[in-house]
Length: 452
Ligand code: FAD
Image (tube, rainbow, N blue to C red; front, side, top):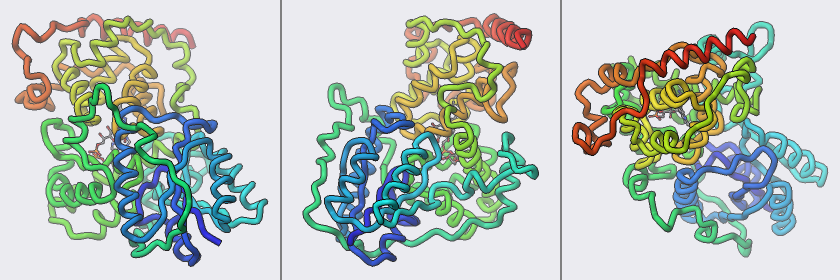
């Protein structure tokens, strides 16, 4: 009886324990991707992510076909669509890799019901190097602070080596599949994805090319260069990690066990520590699945957010605030589906602090526009900037975007790249007085403190 491999946030053939289990079982395999926008705990993906998903599934489908495999696309709630496919193909086993957010209950219920029907149903560790329930403080509670969390992860020892790509995948014929085009994941009228297509090559190949390029180049200067948005000093692996086109085990393998120059070797721990932030945020999400909707620190529930005025919000979204570093970042996001980390912090701080707009409003915009929009990293980082998160920046630390620009984009290269009209009459004057609004933000924070 065939095996079904149900892929979700792990759109890769290499280092995929669920696929490995199916291959080892020795029966024909159906690889399934389910577009599930209905199950409880699912957050439908944003527009830029839909673009990415389309291309990622195309690339994956090609790789599966090259190996003789069967790739099936279906749409619907997992609790119905998966058992239906099981019946159709007469499957004897279902394998998948774990998720860590609100959909865990869906997976757990399916595992139980499949097993009750006599099937083999098994889930695997694939997308985090450290399963959240294995990393705890001395007293057995989850970590809420990054540095001791990462230290505890490192003390667990080296993560396992990554698994090779299967050479062949024996398929099953005659299984119905949706046509990817019918899912309409790509924008049409207007097609706003031109800049995104120029910037990215979704899929496993693209991920490994990017990693190789980074190991040979950007990593050498990572610690010093990672804060400068005009430099290409970071890996840009985030969307690949988000969709699981590359796993953290593969990154660890390449960086810790592969060939590097001495300079790159010196920078490796700093880079892996950032990958560790992703593990930390998933650890937070695992223990606090309402991360996207609720303040991690409940005292922030009393924060006096202002009602966003439409024209102010649009100026921020469209990169017309008159504050160059912010506008450059928001335009980079719109054009390429990505924004440099330093600039993400600055634009988020302006929205939350100078404009006093609830972090959830900004998080939702990022969710729609980022190709790396991630259910753990996005809300966790917004809460980090807001001060409401675990191990967050204190609220009273307000970024000054002009000073940030002086420090990290000294020659204005990044700002000019995205704002050709900078310095002309066409560029707007600032929508907010940075000094006054900073004082107001601090007053609002005092209000919060006094409310306790
Ligand atoms: P690198 O510096 O090369 O880092 C390597 C990997 O480490 C990244 O790909 C990412 O997986 C992880 N990483 C790096 N920085 C962080 C961080 N601060 N938190 C968690 N993981 C990190 N990252 C996302 O992946 N998805 C998001 O939706 C997202 N939203 C963000 C929202 C805000 C407001 C802020 C301030 C940051 C957000 N980040 C998010 C984190 C960070 O900006 C990106 O991961 C990073 O810019 C991706 O670029 P890179 O791959 O070149 O990073």
